[in-house]
Image (cartoon, rainbow, N blue to C red):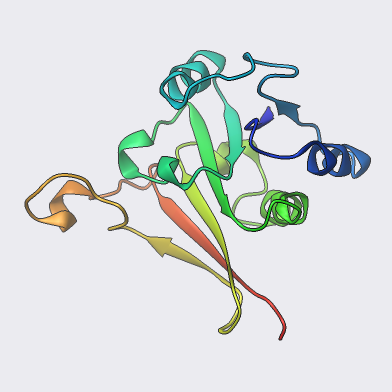
Amino acid sequence: MNVLDENIVESQRQLLRSWRIRVRQIGHEVGRAGMPDEEILPFLRRTGRVTFFTRDLRLFDAKNRSLDYCIVCLAVGQYEVAVFVRKLLRHPALKTRAKRMGKIIRVTLRVSGSGRWVRTKNVNCVGGGNPRQQCAVAENFTLWQMVVTQGR
């Protein structure tokens, strides 16, 4: 199941549906309106096998990982969400639900550079000590970052 956070505008949800991408949105079809961030992760665990799309970058953290769901943090404009959701769902490495489970993905837009997927391991670690030890990421718990080039 693909679930959109309530911070994603209605027009983007409708655009995804017009492309025949099945999505549900928190506050509309699942969950409840105004659901605080603290309730989202337990909701995803209970629901299971969910790919959750949000514009809230605070969720891009290794401590939020679980084999029960995938979190996609979209660092793109509010009217570009649908395009990047579709790109992500079509990417060969993430095309199936099984390939996405256990991953936390950040999609960012850059003006220069080449469009690429980057596997990152030491991102947004919390606490002191050696970040490499804290964020040692197992094969099933991988943080991904999609960097997309925007033409000038």
